[in-house]
Length: 244
Ligand SMILES: C[S@@+](CC[C@H](N)C(=O)[O-])C[C@H]1O[C@@H](n2cnc3c(N)ncnc32)[C@H](O)[C@@H]1O
Image 1 (cartoon, rainbow, N blue to C red):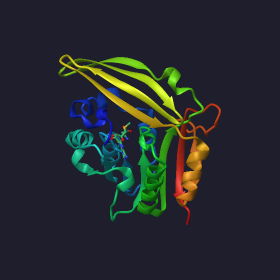
Image 2 (spheres, rainbow, N blue to C red):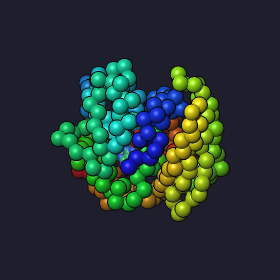
Image 3 (spheres, protein in one colour):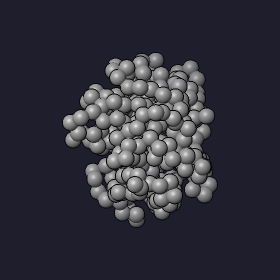
Image 4 (cartoon, helix red, strand yellow):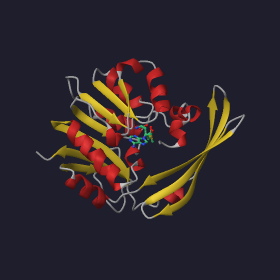
């Protein structure tokens, strides 16, 4: 099951208010801007599909896949939501006869894959659904950075139904996993979502890719195109191709 903050319709409806358009989405969108022909694009863990819609509005053929029906419901109801093919599935069990030019996994969705088997199955799905000369791009937070130090936040959201206070709280670390809670204080109730993310090292991800028949073309360390530098980069943005 996806976490409560993706599964609960009231919380899924909040997603675009606290995670709206951002520099990482500009980055992913730019991957498809120099192409004059429509690309086939697959977004695994698409959430509310802002990026899918933006690609589709540029004429690309886009499939957005997410296990949460609540997130997909928000996605499909947005203006131009009908330009995208929405599919309910976990990344690791996604199946289609289509083959894609570009497969992405964004918003650190890769880090929700907690088990080695889930990661291997996801890479296998990516490889299987990628065209021969296709490109896979996904990112994960660099575990060398002390994420827990700045993990907590609190923000007030002005929604049509009233003010909602949202806060994120670090709970504990267990090996390469971080456990945290999201609290949502609505005018009439408080909802709490417990969550867990995996922070794999750069070497561990490279190893999973290698044994999945995938090769790394480059790794960026930020959304401005800077190369990954393990001691200081916050992001590890992997550009991956099939081993032919
Ligand atoms: C942080 S959101 C990212 C959404 C979107 N990619 C973005 O950039 O805004 C993580 C998404 O991953 C989805 N998710 C959870 N488990 C998943 C899995 N095993 N495979 C694919 N997506 C998953 C959640 O439902 C949620 O929509």
